[in-house]
Length: 229
Picture 1 (cartoon, rainbow, N blue to C red):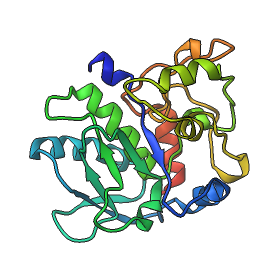
Picture 2: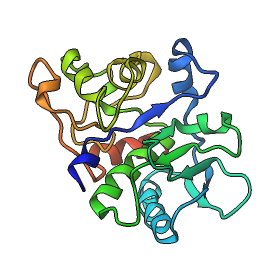
Picture 3: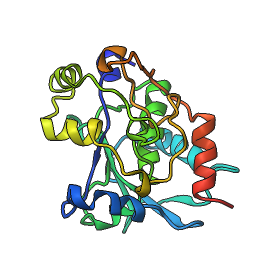
Picture 4: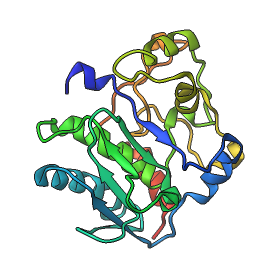
């Protein structure tokens, strides 16, 4: 993984008609049904890269994991539609929000994955984005442990390359806090695949988190509870 890619961040997106006012309600409605078969289609991409993405994504639904399945299709309608548009970042809609998106449009994108991406980088990005596709929020927005942000430092870093986020995107993806009543959450897990890497300079109390490329024990326990057998 290159240093540049390590500094890229996922941007969680909302359907066009959603507003910040409805955001918590959308969280309640974004979970799939237990036992659902979620269809997935690649809109583009090298065949080997597609295979690698699929293999990693299915770790969420493997033995004794989430009680649902991903059904990858080559054509026709699909719930999750994956693109590899370079320059558009890596992002995903949250859970069933993808059903609100026009059927020809992407609901997930891998903007910096290529056929030459390392296994570690691909795992980090794919597990994270498919976590969103299952309805999981960013771990640093977990209401059980609000982070004491150094807002000036965060804005300075994320408003420049390689992310180039505007103030609204930074607010939505970093600083916004979820209402505890609107989410199911464990105690904050710095090892979660859903946690952003957070340098200590971004916080006022020295809290930090590293890059994660594996599902943590808490991730596994949580997804089993969310989609029980």
